[in-house]
Image (cartoon, rainbow, N blue to C red; front, side, top):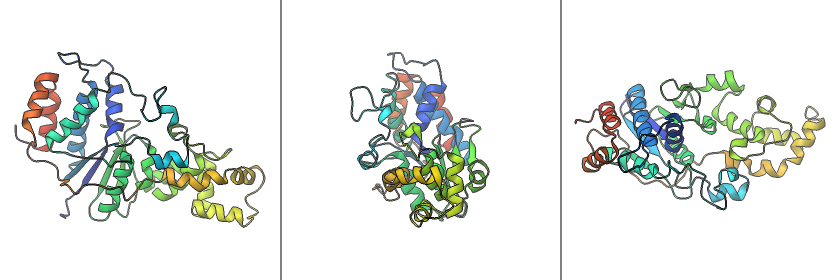
Length: 311
């Protein structure tokens, strides 16, 4: 590895959903296929490559958006996002659905590594790649999902580029200092432990009744880890009393499994493929076909320029 190496990991679904909703008026292709998410995703990638100058780049993919091991642990996990009448299909806007395979194929045609793992979410792909490369080069994780704050590690050079508020151009850089300032926890692991206690309604995680973010952070700070909180509870620590003790005891079964759901995997099976930023197009024929069929010459040109790929 070179001292200048940097790995940029994209939470691809987070970005293409943002692109879809951010471009209010779809720009359909001549055949009527909507292209707003496709255009937006390519432009976002160009912006990110220009801003962070990565030497390695991966578009991480949801091969399974609601993995069985998480559902078995907590059946409510993402259940509210299921399409009505389905047990495994995510509710997705009809005019986004046909764009998703176009997005993947476009990225592959550029030569950008697109990696997913059967039975795992993109978060797990990201967690696995961070685990593999932490300490060998700085890693920036691009997402609109706070769950991935658990990967922040200043010593290993791992940051989160958080797009939920400022979008891609003005995304927040999440470091351990940010976690201390905004969430009163000092590390990515402490954030994950706090998240187990707090819960997350957007993912269908109930959390512990009566324990919000501030209380959860205070407990983690007092006892070091979620395991430390539970040990103190079991030991009868007098500082945990009243309704708080009652609620923590009532949530014992939930806390047994919450870390299985909240923690991203570090060992998802991934193919061994080059992750370096492409310097030439992998499939120029497909890109040209897409430019002609879907009218995306501008986004394709901008991403080529960002990557330094010759026209």
